Image (cartoon, rainbow, N blue to C red; front, top):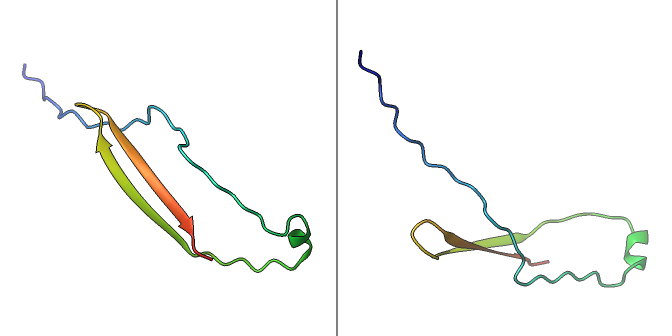
Length: 67
C-alpha cells in the first residue's frame, strides 16, 4: 500500500517582540481632551529585515505620524 507524502508547509512564528525606541507626545495635555475630537490619520510605515542566522531574522518596523 502506498501512502501519499504531503509537502511540508512553511511555518511562521514570532519568537520575541521588543521595543528598541519609542516616543509618544501629547501636547497641551490634559486640556486638549476637552475640545471636540476630529481625528485624521496620516501614517507612514517602513520595514527592514536583517538575517541573524540560518533561520532567524530581525524585522524592524518604523512608523511615523506626519500630522
